Image (cartoon, rainbow, N blue to C red; front, side, top):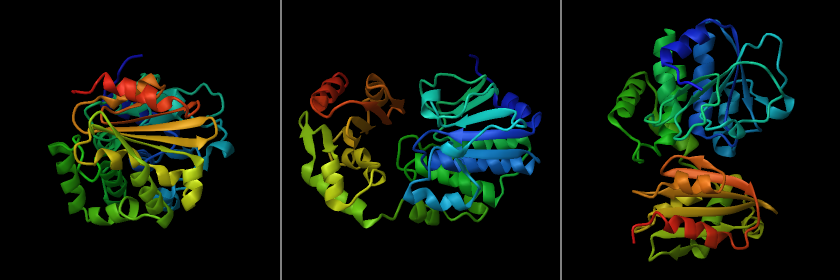
Length: 322
């Protein structure tokens, strides 16, 4: 499959009327923010858009469900008027909701390394910090003004995928875009508080258990923890409360790689990998059937916890500078 220019993507959007837009399963702020930014940009051009989610959003993002009449995977059917399916922030088709069979052309907009270029039309910018950054440029190609509403969703995407501008993907272009958005009246501190800076009590109690149960390997360069159903039940935490724990472990002084090993249900394991400087955790995630970014990746698969830690540490050791 070939790569397209953003201008070609914009022309394709302008030439059609009705779109189905979705993002990856377990969507994050970049994914949902980008979906909403694109939906409103297309709406400004008189287009019809339907947004598809796998399931209700996690608690920290749930307020965004008031922004659009989202359709859940289980309730979705294609309409005769649908012309194009657009996927956002998804490295391959296995990462998008399970949609009914269709023959629509697919536009794939993404920023992940190793994107499978599964679309009939593909625009993948691996240098973009977030899909929201791509959407900001796409609005220009569409002739759509980034107003306060669209800018709000783009700001959510940028703030989320740069870790509030803490991550290494923060660059001058991102900061210039953000400056433009602030001049529109968008309150970035409010976005932080709403989506990233407040926590339900069970999540904090789970963090306490994590820090008491976590282990260090390779002279403190790898911090890892196994979160099983018993640990979740002990503090009344949900699966959503276990999100981002690998990032918390990575932030321990001296740690290069943080690893969370989550038992989603008996026989289903979810891995989260985060690194600081040099370990390409996307390669480690790929080994376990997942993927993502060099510094933030994950995988979900059928398997047991027994023996898994040794397999993970053995793979990480291939990339550690000892």
